Each structure stands twice: as C-alpha cells, then as structure tokens.
Length: 260
Image (tube, rainbow, N blue to C red; front, side, top):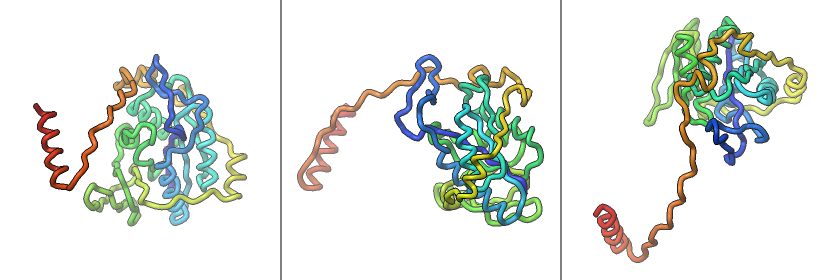
C-alpha cells in the first residue's frame, strides 16, 4: 500500500503576529511544530505500512524551515519527505494550497491512500484535505476515527459524527482526514532519528511542478482576509449573589432590561 501523508508546520505558540499589509501570519522567528492533528495521520500511515507493507511519502507545503517537520515525520517511520516550497506560494488560501499539494501528489504518481489531519491548529478550516480530493477527483471521508478493514480496493472506516458515528466504505484511492481518537502517536526511535538526520528531502518549486501561476499564492486565492483586529475586551459583568430563586429572578430582570 502506497500512502501519502500531508502535514503542515504550524506555530507552537498562540502569540502569533500578523503582517498588516498582507493580513497573513508572520512565521519567521516563531518556533514551529508539526500540526498536532497531522501526528495522528503519520501514526496511522505507519501502522498501515506495518500491516500491509508498501511505502509512505510525507509532503508539506511551506517555507524552508518546514524541512524540520518532514525530518521529524521520517523519524517516526515515514520513508521519504518532499517539501513544496516557493515564494510564489506565499499567502495561499486553502483552495490555492490544496491545488498546489494536489499537483505535487500527481507528480508523485501511484498511491492508494492520502491521509491528513482533520484540520490545522493555526487555521481551523478543515478545508485543505477535502480540497485536495476535489482537485484529484477521488473519494474523501472526513473525521475518521478508525480504519476497520482494507480488502482489495475497498476500505471500511468509522467516521465520527456529533452524535455517534457512521460506517463508510470507499473505493481506493481515497483521501481520509483523521481525528485524534484514531490512535496514539509513537515517539521517534533512536534509529529513526538517525535516519531522519541524514535523509534527503526533495525540494519541489513552482518550476518543478509546472503550476499555473494564476492559481498560486494571493493571486490564486479566491478568499482573502480583508482585515484582522483584536476585539475590544468586554467590561466585567454584574455579580449576583443569594439563593438560587433570587438569582434567577434577578437574572431575568437584567435580561429584560437588556432587551428593552
């Protein structure tokens, strides 16, 4: 089974800065980590390889420092890494990002499964995985909590819902986005860390992928952030005390005053 795992390097801290001109994250000088949800995708890929054999390729679109995220993934059992990196990709929204990654996956060629974390911790849109499947025209299943069975070219999974779960069968190749309930990511082994240190990370730019420049970066992003600002802090509310019936009555009176 040939598996591709898409990961993203995200800021480790919530104290992020915004470029006031482009309204995009300033990533330079900020310590970064693998998106936590992507760690579960990495682990699930390794488990599938241990069970069925095959090859795992991890791919990330980002600045040069994302090389560190790819090496960490390799230390956990991934076979090889590819960094999709070019200034032309800067400012990409989820649609432009998914387009770029889908074209990189086409360049990789033969694959049976694409795994992604359910969403990125810095954007929380959960759109890139589904976007990749749309560009590749393959089935997708989101919020997967368990891979139950893989038989020939069919995979059966459990998909988490707000109340309960669904059992879904999908033909392969397909794309899955996974939730943290699917597994517990392993720690890198010493052997894995040594292999990751010397691994050769492929670097693919716009030129290598032969991409349409009108579909990249800010130019190719149909959604753009017009303005980012910090909300004005709310003033402290009124504290109510007394017995529960008295508090309830006072609260109702306050709400009536707000309405009127």
